[in-house]
Length: 88
Image 1 (cartoon, rainbow, N blue to C red):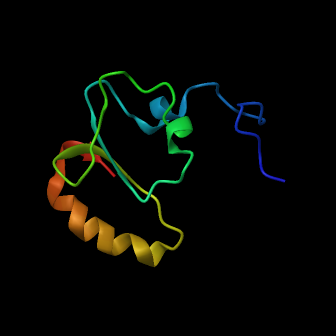
Image 2 (image 1 turned 180 degrees about the vertical axis):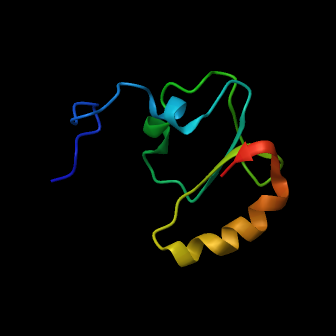
């Protein structure tokens, strides 16, 4: 059985996921192949976080893959657009 998403899992800090990930006010967010429930995962993001519709300069990239080998081509394409101090 999967752990609940409501924060009731043992050891859960209660801190929103966006804070744990380091998504901050003003960040340009790039999502690659996000799941249908990504908006729920991003709940609590600052209102001025910009979600990019296509690859451009970004501060925070979140790539969703099911195999490690699938990550490399995305990184090759995205790294040139990663802002200084940004993260994937």
